[in-house]
Length: 145
Ligand code: RB5
Image (cartoon, rainbow, N blue to C red; front, side):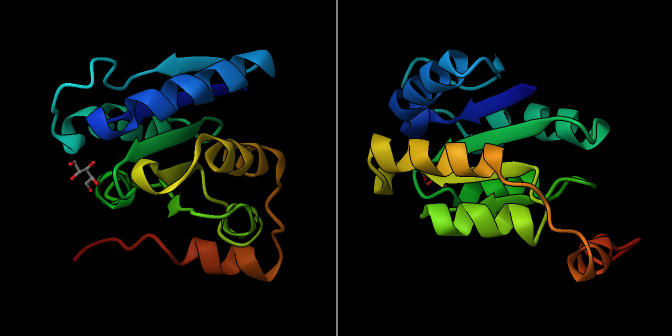
């Protein structure tokens, strides 16, 4: 599976660790984020990723900023993108099982590398439950307003 990954300056170091983990596991990673650590505006690094996820219902994304909030706000503007902010592996499991999240948002300044990697692994290895959750997920997108 291809994983798209993007981040602002707050997520550079963690992103490198996550990419190593994913590549060791055999995932093909497309790195769309900042690699310099110099200040960047988080919308600029997230719009291209969110656009790509919105166009393909097969891809998954991982996004990071200091709190994980700015990047999720941007990603969730796109139709078909369901970005969930996670700070524990239990939440990572639930955003897959219940919300069919296709983007994982990580608060890079508030987690250790080990915690973040457990969250990434859980997100990628947990399936959507469907059933009553499918009906709820189908109600997320609205036509206007
Ligand atoms: C950058 O300092 C910080 O504001 C950003 O990484 C993020 O937390 C925004 O939501």
